[in-house]
Amino acid sequence: MRASTSHKIDQTTKKKNNMDAPMHTSRPSIFKPPKTSHGHRNNYSPPTLSMSNMSKRKPVLVSFASLSSESSSSELQKPQIELEFIGPKVGNDGSYPVDRARAVSGEKLLRTIMADNKIELYATYGKVMNCGGGGSCGTCIVEILHGKDILNERTDAELRYLKKKPKSWRLACQTIVGNKENSGKVVVQRIPQWKK
Image 1 (spheres, rainbow, N blue to C red):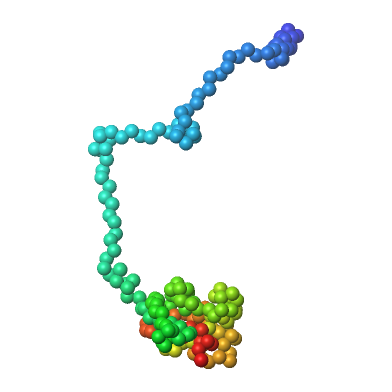
Image 2 (spheres, rainbow, N blue to C red):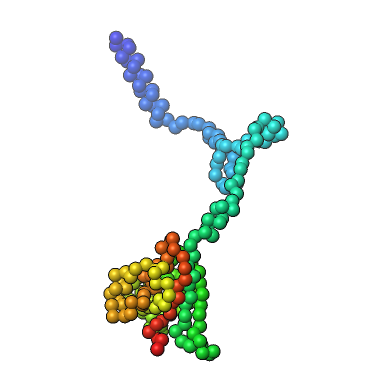
């Protein structure tokens, strides 16, 4: 038994001694896959196309939807509101200048329509002092001369800022033109406080 134990000790000692000894190894070879055009290593290679491969494939049919006259005419069928904006000061010819615009019913505020069509809305102080359409300054006052029934009801902001003003006066930033179903004509007096 002693012989087997001593044999084990010798084996263990040899293993320890071998670990301490320097290892002589050759430099391992490193496999590098080819680089792609973006500098990333990639083992994927795209399938090659040949005439024999292409003849075996089934054709794919692709259909494109075309616009029918019904769908394009439905866009045109949306109710339209005609707007006339009367200027606050008499022109050289003795009449008030009139700007015209059209809008789809119920889609925009009066202020937005005027801005889109580059129609002046603010008096001198309003250009600097306006709130940007939030209904908190009362500087975008207009007077509705015709078509009041096409517009939305006065909002709380309008009731607050226009309390002592005529019922025909509105805030352009609070006035929705149409209700998506009605159409007609609205005549607007710009900057009514200037008109005498």
